[in-house]
Image (cartoon, rainbow over all chains, first blue to last red; front, side):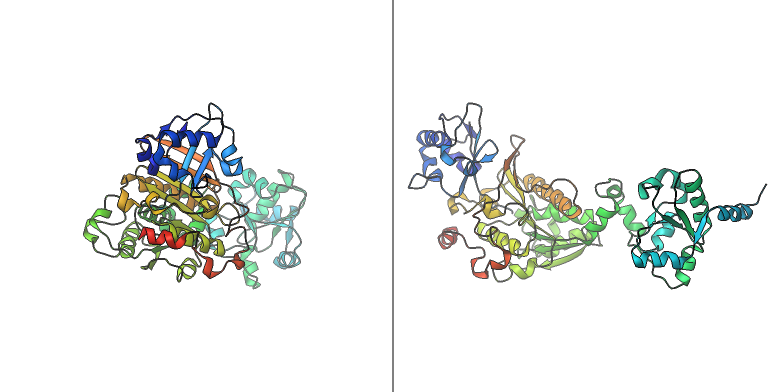
Length: 89
Length: 394
């Protein structure tokens, strides 16, 4: 399961959470982008890496301190996509 | 039956009495005797011997072991004139098993007559005791914590959605000095969420409006108004001397700027942001936990970073997040509990879910992996593609 942040929801038809298959974080996000093409450029840079301004967590841990996009994903895991927010007013 | 005077005289014959000079010499030489004041609370609060512990005679039997746990250690008791301390010394020696207890002859009165120093402890006024009585009742705050709050200097960046509830509740909690940075004036569309302002203050600068609201709750709070926009030229000066910063800023460049300045000054920042029905909260405590750049190395492009003004927000949401920030401020000031450092809390109001994510210090962080003295003015607030970002954000 992938949790979608508010700014990306319009790209996935408004859903807060979507199901996506894959054995690694990269595969899950690629399958999300295949199904919802509008998310592709928001998640991935032109060279295929995660955009630096998008944080991705496997459960509660940043994938940057795990194996990045190669981090293995199990059936019960949740992936959280989190771009920075600045609103305060 | 002996008179009271006779009894005290007889008891003084059975215990050791010491002269104030001996106690003074002991203190000067740093010889470790435990000095205990056995007078009543109000007498102790007025003044007492430096370093003295306080156990009122009426509570002697139940409390002395908390102040003097080692019964073989030398204990010197005193009161106002030496009578109550003599009786207390007798009790400790005969009934409680203390092996080396003495009473100071002439009490604190003779001590002062000899010209020796006393400590005059800071206390709350009667009005403050009443006002903060519910804090004084919880041991995690108590008198000590309330004193820390009264001494604290907290800076609010923005008197808007997040800053409003923080200003009101931190003022109510007795934070002694609240600084507010905001260059805006109150607008009708603010009042859906910015509860420090009011209908009759539309058009008034937010720093002035917030000051009015703060003083209506707690006139003792000192308000420092900074009616300007935070930028690279003023940030180091404005945040100087504050103990905690509450970040309710509405844009990325200023958040990065604040981060870099607060790392240089080593001031913890309680940071929150809001959008729609969702909020984020974390504490960035320089060098003790990650900084904002460890979490977000670079901001998203402008089309992925809408502000609330443009995108809308549930009015209550900044209330929730601003109060969560206020709780973190009080914890940082008093030392109570576990601050939200190294953790990011996500609140989804529609689903009523709280999600906690781990935030790690980045060993390669461009700012907080370095010594604060090495961070230059020129680098502050700058991030990759900074100029393109600002151009895109208009």
